[in-house]
Length: 164
Image 1 (tube, one colour):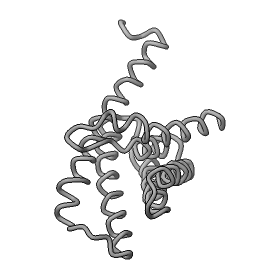
Image 2 (image 1 turned 90 degrees about the vertical axis):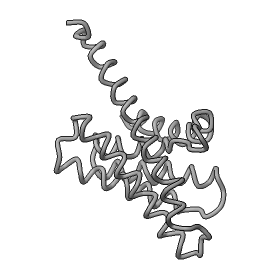
Image 3 (image 1 turned 90 degrees about the horizontal axis):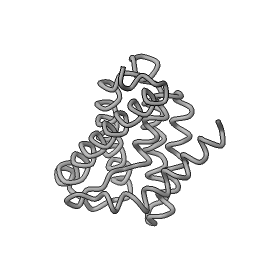
Image 4 (image 1 turned 180 degrees about the vertical axis):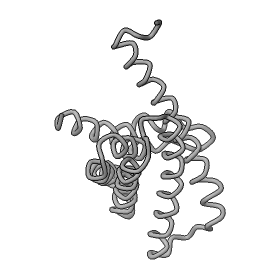
């Protein structure tokens, strides 16, 4: 199980640099490490979500350059928050998972903006939220919904109850 988790973390970090640019629509690309951190937090708890978000965010920071640690911190907080939500809500329902992913993506973008303001990041709050964070949150939600659907179909196919 630890090997599977390690491979998922490494794969999520590498997918952000290799697959996400190919999935870009209108200048907006999905945040695959954030999607993975939120889903791991929802399914395995706050500690796993926090650790996975930190590791994948650190990989993302190292690959992108710039301020190292911003992605790691915000994704760790999002994974931890997802794990905390898992203890309070019925998270096996996709109607909780996908809106939770969208809200946590928006909160992660807002937190990252506030963190970068300490270092005088030159961006307008309204433009950043309207043109970067909100489209990415909606795209992450659509990709998360497709992932949840694919996983539920694969699980029902594996159990043999797909067509019954």
